[in-house]
Image 1 (cartoon, protein in one colour):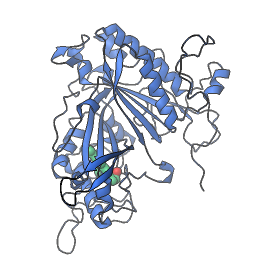
Image 2 (cartoon, helix red, strand yellow):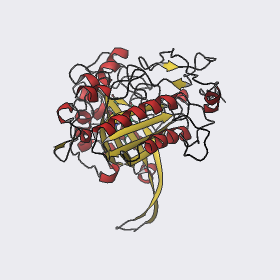
Image 3 (spheres, protein in one colour):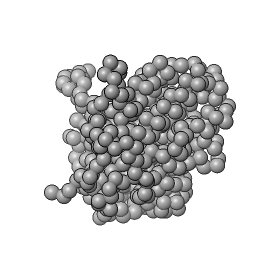
Image 4 (cartoon, protein in one colour):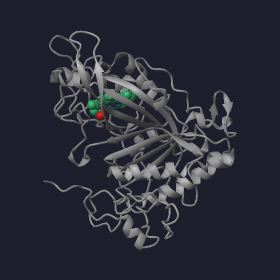
Length: 437
Ligand code: HEM
C-alpha cells in the first residue's frame, strides 16, 4: 500500500506546550502561493507541509491544497455594538493563528478551578494542515433594511443578495448567517475542535446558526470522487479550457479567484465564497445505468475523461457528434452547462466536500408507497471567485433550469460570504473594513 502523504513527522499540540513559541517560519510556497506555509522539520520535501501558516497575503483554505475534512459554521451576531464585533474578530484571528500552528486556542492555565482556555480534545493531535477561513455576509452590513455597525456604505457591490434559483428548496434556518468560519484539516477532530473553540469565544457576541461537516478523498490517489462515484474537481481555473476569460496557469487562477481594485481595499486579495449544501438522491442514482450517469455528467465515470475522450485531462469537445448527429456531450450535461465556453468565460474555484448526515424516514405518497430510510447525504459545494455575479450566479442560473443533474440533486442550504484578504501578524481579519469605516 502506498504511504499516506500526511504520515511524515507532524507537530503535536503537546510538543508546542513543551516548546514555548515554537512557530517555524514559513517557507514552501506549494500550491498555496502567497499563503505561506510552514513545514515542521521538512523531512519529506515532496509531501504537503504539516502546518499551514495563518498569516499571509490571502486567507488560507482557498487555494491551499485541499485537506480531507471540513467543518463549516455560520454565525449570527447577537450584539448591537461594533466594538464587540471588532474584539471578536481580533480574538478569532489570534486563536486561529494558534490553532493553525497546532497550539491550543488560548494558553491553558494551571488553575484547575477555572474554565480552561481550550477544551482540550486536540491537545495530542497534530495541526493536520488546519486552515481557518473567515467571511462576512451582507447581513453584517445591513439587516432588515437598516445599517448595522455603521458599515452599510462599506458593503461591496459584489456582496449581492443571492437571487432565487429554480428548484432550490432552501431551509432558512440552515442558510445565511452574518459571519462564516470554515475550518479545513486532515483530521475530523481538529476541524471540529477549531470551530468549537471559536464558538465558545463568541458567547454573548455571536451564536452558531448552522454548521456542516464534510469529507473528501485523498488527492494522492487522483482527483477525489464524489458520492456519485465521479471524479470531481478536475477542471479548475488555471487549467487550460476553451473559452476561459482568464489565461491558463497560476495567473489565470488568481484572476478568477482574487478580488481586485474593482472593489474595496479590504477585499483586494480576498475572495467571495458561495456555499451550497446539495442533497443527492443516492438511492435513485444507484439504480441508474452507468452510461446514463455519464450522459448526466458529460464525462466517463471511471476514467473521468470527457465523453468521447480517453484521459481525464483531455479537453471537452462540445462540437463532437455521434453517428446520428447528436452531441456526444448532451445539451443538458452538467459539464457542458458548467464550462467556461458556455458561460462567457466564467470560472470558479471549486473546493467541495461530501457530506453524510445520516438517514431520514421517508414515506412515498404514490405506488408502491415505499416507506423506509433515505440518505441525507450529498455535496457541500463551496466555490471561490472574484465576483459571484460573474461566477456562481452566471454559471448556476442556466444550470438550475437545464442541468440533467437536477433530477438527482436539491440545494437545501446557501450562503454568500466576502472573505477578506489575508492578515499580517499583529493584525486581525477584516481590519481594513472596520478601521477605515
Ligand atoms: C450535486 C451537485 C454537483 C455534483 C455532483 C457535481 C459534479 C461535477 C463533476 C463530476 C464534474 C466533472 C469533473 C470536474 O471538472 O470537476 C463537475 C464539473 C463542474 N461543476 Fe459540478 N457538480 C455539482 C454542482 C455544481 C454546481 C452547483 C456548480 C455551480 C456553478 C458546479 C460547477 C461546476 C463547474 C464549473 C465544473 C467544471 C466544468 C468544466 O469546465 O469542465 N457544479 N461537477
